[in-house]
Image (tube, rainbow, N blue to C red; front, side, top):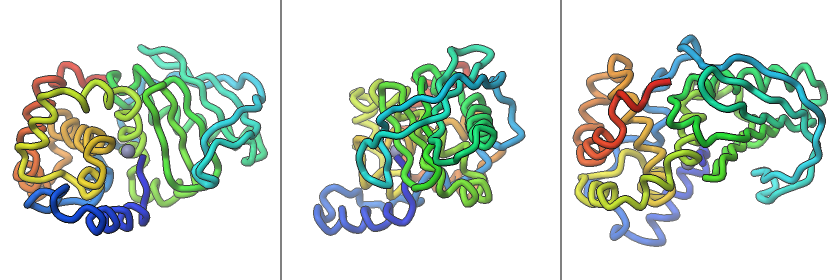
Length: 254
Ligand SMILES: [Zn+2]
């Protein structure tokens, strides 16, 4: 999950509640990893996305961050197809009113999903988009819920791709990595967490926050500034070494 504003509040609250024992001696160099280098994946980068078919209108209960619970609603349902992975269901909340608008939304996110490495797409089965709200959500059962209220801001900042990347790590890799002894040892040995968000939630957010950085350094090093690189290497060398062994470049392709 990624939130703005609230994230800062929660970090402050967590530090107040638990004091310094949960934190490392060194402060994380960044607040949230999707904002570190917003061009890790660019709009113009290749996508494995092939296209979209409208299927029908469905009535479903999905989590909605605006209500902080699952609510019944009607959705325009689409099937998005990809060159080298299974079709993905996109449900666009009918609060957008028009199937043409819903098609544009599903098409945009469908293409972004196809820009993510295959290892992150394998378990993304179902994407739900609510028209407003902020906090995105994903689980290990293959569901990603997008609250589209910050769409214009995220697009302007160039972080839509990085946001989807972060959520897809929750869907496809969290369970594989978070309990591995090598990962937990790397967490303990590193001087710091990479972001405030990872430090706030070491079990649920550290993998997603760190994996984007690992991907950037291995696959898009030219898009990471030297200053950023210095901060990353100083904070999480053991995590990067661990992820480098587990997911080298040969496993990070589209
Ligand atoms: Zn998250």
